[in-house]
Length: 434
Ligand code: S3P
Image (cartoon, rainbow, N blue to C red; front, side):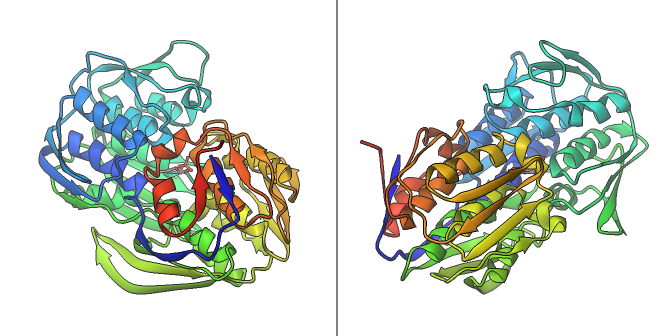
């Protein structure tokens, strides 16, 4: 797919539903007793894999209309008759492993080539400490893995990095463990699991601890089906908004964006860079604050992103780097080693992609620095099947001097189905490469 320098982008769009909340609504819906009605669900490939998993674990999953789904849970997971294939979804597999570990069943989890390269012991380690048994089918720490669950004992787990996936997996296992499970994080990671567990009727305790917190959960609490309204995903809204910031003369609004403060680090950083970003129509929807975010073309300047902000924008560094390429001066992004174990090694791929487009980038083991200005473009970017690497470079191409091509746009559908059409609707020149 190729993106070309575009005239000013104008318009208002809706971002697809939040990926984190969509996965959780399927998983908790399947663990709960009774009916869960979801609207605004992200119908991306990642979440659809989790929906299939929910069915394989015995829930009834029905699509009622666009983004409207009904999950009828049986109050627990039954043994699936097949391997649970989570596709490309790290969140899906890690949360499902935690949930499944609490039931007396044996389950084999697998994923696509990218997911098979990602570390799993960060989740299976604590699950084993709780009493789950694991059998790696190939290399240790990598999918496929079989989990033999049941009879778990609560643990007090102290995380070295803030990770909502690890925290959530332990809490979901803790729901069916004997005793009180606790997870302590050095910094606060997104709290959608905690919020949604409460909506399903469970009590979750939180104590502030320095920059982070300790989350506690008593085992044996039942979940009851509920209504979940999924707001727009700030991590997806970031792409059309970034295009609005870098394409001269633009004004782009994304409506209904979730504004949970543990997800909005990018917006804060853009403001520090001088971005003209306004939020209107703030309201509460689905237990989260949402608003309409407008980005107007802005003269950006480089900033040092505080390392303590990493957890609140970990998926947004690729698109931040693309906008930093147009900012005057250097943008310093450090303390983001976790980027190397996402859908791809996102530090290496952003460094290579930006360099292929004539941008000066310095790579460090746990970070990277982008020196901005005007962007030459003209590169063909290797995405390693990573949706966010693809979308970030397509946005770059909209304001670069020469077209930017990404080698594999298909994976964009994991988180942002309809991305190309939505961007074209704003006036972006994006099309299949010739
Ligand atoms: C997610 C947590 C983050 C994030 C991922 C979604 C979640 O991962 O990168 O896209 O929904 O819990 P980590 O918890 O591994 O940082």
